[in-house]
Image (tube, rainbow, N blue to C red):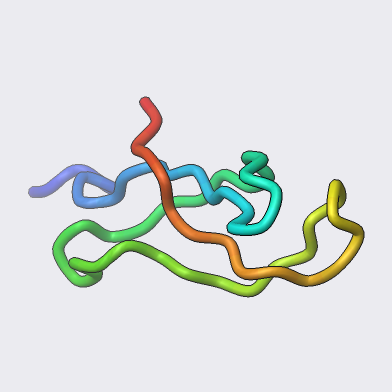
Length: 58
């Protein structure tokens, strides 16, 4: 049996405007091949901006 969460990786989401790292989330590396891009609230810009995946965390 496969371990739970074996194909999931932890990624950081960075604001595209101010370049600050605001969120940490996970994604399935097999089903989602491209990098994540989500609209989320940035506490530094104080508005909703696009956040994109920048790096993999351990």
